[in-house]
Image 1: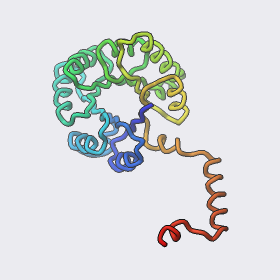
Image 2: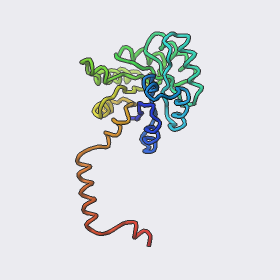
Image 3: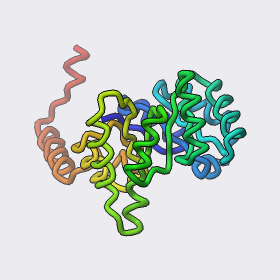
Image 4: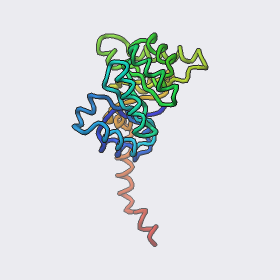
Length: 223
């Protein structure tokens, strides 16, 4: 499974990119607004930090403006994935851009039927929102299972399932077990994946035992 982070915070992106665990970045208008940065300059900077796909979302909802915005965003960097909403206009834009070789991330997916439409429109990624479904009493993970199952029936479908609106590590683990291709998550959730109380307990014991030996590794290396 590929890991993307869902943020427009450059410091977070740089820090996590240094771990070698980061495969891409997703942004949206809300995250950009929170950053207080100029959208175009911000996206360019992110693309320089992360070699993998960087999703940059159109702001328009009508077809003509959305297409123009998408074409412009695609010129910013070769690793841009233009992000469009799962609407009739958005899927038209997806079809045109993807036919021209641009990566497209179709966002705000809440049903398997919508995911099937996005795949037929040539989406590179489909972004089903598990957390938002959970919030209204639905099982968001069941949507991931349905989409993966449908896509697996058709070898011609190359659209990758990009699990979005992730709230906790279980969303990631369960989606990976289902065969989802990508998980995009807040930086805080990615950091939660490192944590386990037994890891911390074991490390504390190792540190204490080693200190009791009075030895150091680097002193020997310097001889």
